[in-house]
Every structure is written in structure tokens, then in C-alpha cells.
Length: 207
Image 1 (cartoon, rainbow, N blue to C red):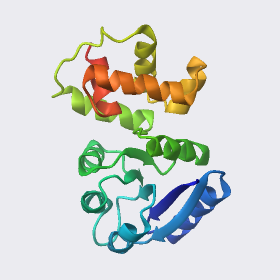
Image 2 (cartoon, one colour):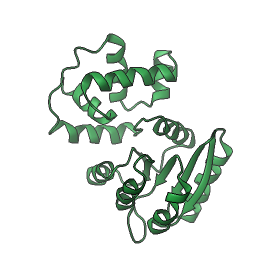
Image 3 (cartoon, rainbow, N blue to C red):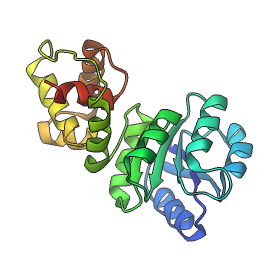
Image 4 (cartoon, one colour):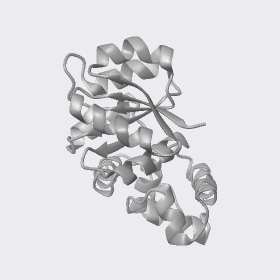
């Protein structure tokens, strides 16, 4: 089954471009598009896509508030922000509202497709630049948690995560399968007692 994706973006041109990229790629299908948060909130509970691509600067209700309301209605839905904003405040607000990933609009088509696959499988894709800002924010308040009980391979995977690499890139780098990377990351989360990539990386960088 292809991954179903909905787009919430006020630019008609960009919506069309994103939809074409998705529909031309194997394993993806754009099922709906919305120019506003209000339209999305009204229709998405019926569509129930696998992943939502969400802009922040929308007319009326902004993208961050849209995520917050959408997560109350559909808590299991995966939302990835796709925006021009890269300041810490917008990143933090989006993630605390429930966004599962955060990419910039200058992200290339292949990178976007990889990120959608990753978020669909339970990951939290971010560009290296965004991940670094999130980690710096977490470092201020994150409790210390030792990573010494991680295996050598788990340490390698976590190190690559801290550099902003996506799951597929980690698999290629370590010459292992995507599924194996996912298994390692699940074990890392369990051992560090965290639930997200960001928390795991923050604890790793505190060592």
C-alpha cells in the first residue's frame, strides 16, 4: 500500500509541485490538499492520511495550532512541518504541539520522500541544522542519562543520528538494512528511556 499524504499549504503553486512529486514517486500518493488550516481540520478526520505535510505561515489558524488541534482529533497521525522558518521558537512550538518531523522548504524531492518514509515508520526526520537547534534547546534542561550501556553499534547509530542523518543514510553508511537501523534505534530509546530522536541525541551529546 502506498503511503497516503495530505498537504496543508497556502501556496497553490507549491501544493501542486508537492503533489506531482508525491504522485510520480513509487509508494506515495497525495490524497488531499488544503490552502488553510480550517479546511484541513474539517476534512482530515474523514481522509485519515498516513502523513500530513504542514506549513506554518497559513492564513487564519497557523500551522502550529493546526497540528495541536489535529493531534487531539487524530493522535496517531504523523505530521511533518515543511516550512521556511528555522528559528528556535517556531521549531520548539511545532514539536511541542505534536509535529513528528521538521523540514525546510528548500529540502530536495528525494530528501523529502526519504523523510516521509522515515516519519511513516515512526522516525522524526529533521535537517542537520534543525536537529542541532533542537538538541541545544534540550541540553539546557535534559536530565543526565549515561549512554555507556549502549553497544558499540548502537553508539555508532546514535552518533550518526546526532549528525542529522536520516535512517536510510545511516543504513547506507553502516552497510546494514533500513529495518536493522530501526531495530537499533528502538533499543537505544529503551536503554536511554526516551521516546524521540531528539531526546536520545540530547543525552548522547551531554556525555
